[in-house]
Image (cartoon, rainbow, N blue to C red; front, side, top):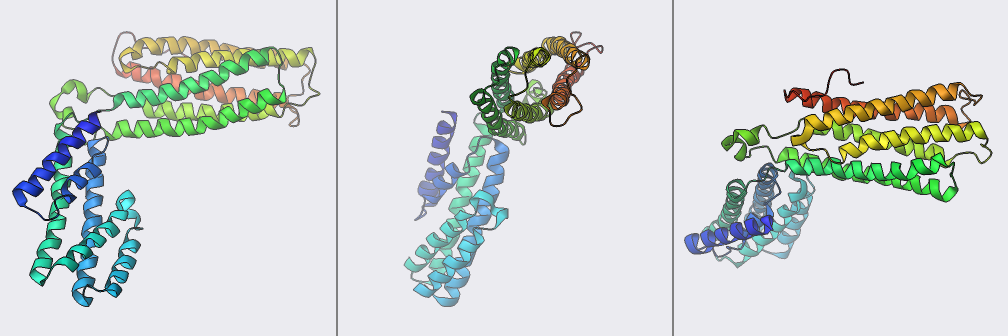
Length: 374
């Protein structure tokens, strides 16, 4: 609703300036431009406005050059279309590239309807002016009317990825504890782990939006509290969680290829110990599902405790497995591979915890996680 309101204000003001004050024959360019460049952040609006203006100027320039040289006939339009559509593929214009061709076509229509060269120059200049008015109004509205600081979207991205990862681990460890590794179950785990990559991508996009929302945002200049209201460790935490998803995906592949002839008491004990590690890892990830900058010192302490418990499970898994006759060095058997996966999983989870610990210590509160955290 915020974007709808801001778009309505920007379009109305742009139309009033273009139609009532300037008296342009094509005032629709102004509100169209104002709405087009309204983005979720001030930085994105500024960047899109610059690209849009460049695309429109390029399209009008192409039409002007060819129109004044060859006249407003069909062959000229063919050349305008060819050149402007080629320009629209220029990667520097990004998503606004197609506006080069759109502007060229509108400019050709305006040029053809004009009766004299001075009138044509005036009307083509007005197209650029209307676009400039729209972009200017759109930027001002985005800057002055509730400029967003989307810190919560970064937290939401971490919450979303952590929740999906935790749900998968919560399904895996009870089945492993009971040695239930049927084809349908493990293939489902593998598919869900693969889908986590898309979730991680959306979370990274939410983080980038949150970072962009701070750029050129006047609210940071007006409020000291907002200036410091951000969490620099979000990016590192999200990257570490993303690496955890890759390791979980690798683990599900190993479990999916679990040999049917692997059985016996030692095998079941191994799976039980591995399940206990995954359960402890799920407890760590669950804390990230509720990460909140305001509660960071307290959450850092809880994460340290969860990490310590998980590290104990990892050591326990390794020691108990080494005291068995299971072939850990045989690459054709799953045990050594899963032990390596367990170590990598804990390394990434521990790094995530350490990142939160460091951020909590940086906040200079007496509740920061102690240095004895593993």
